[in-house]
Length: 331
Image (cartoon, rainbow, N blue to C red; front, side):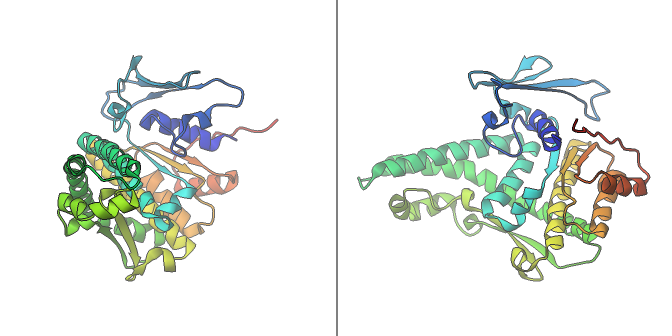
């Protein structure tokens, strides 16, 4: 009972927001006016000092986030202080879903590593929204070429940084994903990830200018980093079209553990790892390979939820590592 809520509360304290929904109001207990989440956090480099993080949603819908009693002016200042990796069943959308899911995965990781990336991405999305709103407002009227030029220069300025960081990051991510996939699956397979972006062969500002007339007709910005994708391939074919359920889960775990390893290397200590009910439809061999890495090779803190207590206990007992079972029984 409440397993996923517990993990999401930890995610709130790391990211100032829910892992599962964009609206904070969805997490207010029925009949309540708001919520308060508090937790004491400690990193490996903090010399045993505990930091108290508090997230409050007020009755008026205003959200506050405090660290040791001091409120942030901008929540973005908190991102990256307490790195965290979350793996949930619906994350398979990273493999099978639209490009938006894969961009979100890459962006969430890079935002924990690079403050400038976070700021540039936020600024890009703000200008993108402004340009799209202006395009929609035209409704057949003549466009202001000078204003569109301003938007396009701003988009290119912010977007070029985001594009370059994504491109460089993928070069580092691919070998890690391949290595983790082989460990989890237990067999070598031809896995590849390819960054797809119009900016690989085009100047961003010129690309926007070339597509301006089309964008006016479509009433939206049709080219840019918000359209980038990562092609996932197995044996030279689209992964989602030919991969089995076990292979999809193996690739998901490989992506997430690669994210974990990059955060650990960058921060100097392992992030919190949250595994929410991920063992369903996973064969015993893959489950044991996964647990062996996250519980034995990894020295960080891991939270695992499962609907089958005995299954989890047996798997953890085989690893001969200390663990604690938290169980809430219905009356």
